[in-house]
Length: 331
Ligand code: NDP
Image 1 (cartoon, rainbow, N blue to C red):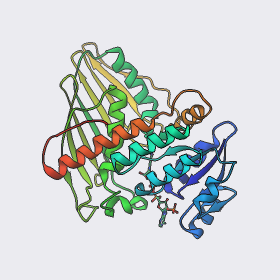
Image 2: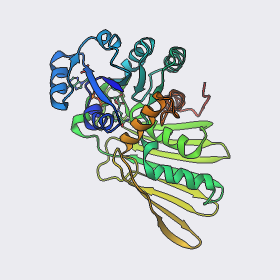
Image 3: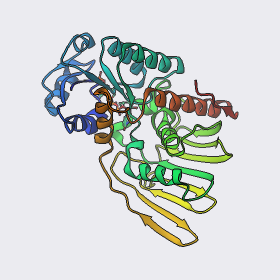
């Protein structure tokens, strides 16, 4: 499978180049950057044989079967549409798009073109979350009452760019809270019906871009869910807690990009750790996507998953901005 990287990004350099190369019969043909200099440097440093500033050369290249789009968020939609129309399969970074109509058009265009659309919500590829999902589905803690998600950290200096100053594509909600939403959808197998939220701004982010959030959501079955997210909290450990009628499941250190996370269950018999056999999240995502392109299964997160997560994230943003409770309606 031949790949083109659309975007000379940090996430591509840190995780995806390696994850593509870990797949059987897969190679990276070229990388697109809007800057000749950045593209050349990226290609040289990652050993990619070519680079370009012109997306059309990628779209016309028969060696390219799939593109990985990790440009800034406002470009995801148009680059996906162009790639799909040229018959390329698309693994797109989250948020899949900035608007619901754009996300729907991406899904429809990929469908019409007969290409796969995946969205890189990596946390559902974490083995601890996969184990937790299985235990929840088996009902080991009885009927679910409430959930808490902890996803606060201090944004590394390298990432203190568009995330903290872009009023359209930046901000914690579309960058990080959207991952929490996708993870909750994955773990619980359903979508929230209502959301409320309050945000912070000004500790790192400016121009009203949010850098901290508390979200409260209602899920089907009258399950209350809380998320705390932040760019400005050092020394915090990400985690999840699921409270059921028969016990509690606690996931610790499980909201990062690393193959990490420890799972504990507490009930009438006491507390025990549940073993987890970890794997690289991005290798897992790329394997699922590559298999889907080859006709087996689906990407770890589909275009529809990306649309649902975006819809809920936008409802949360709306709730924070208006101070109202927002009913969630997934298109
Ligand atoms: P970067 O800021 O590293 O890259 C985004 C774009 O910014 C690049 O495409 C590049 O444009 C441009 N850029 C990169 N370096 C510079 C620079 N030094 N000066 C000016 N412009 C530069 O973003 P991230 O890698 O953090 O995020 C990219 C996408 O991936 C986002 O959509 C984000 O939400 C998502 N993401 C997903 C993660 C996941 O685990 N699923 C983790 C992190 C991010 P050009 O390509 O034109 O050179």
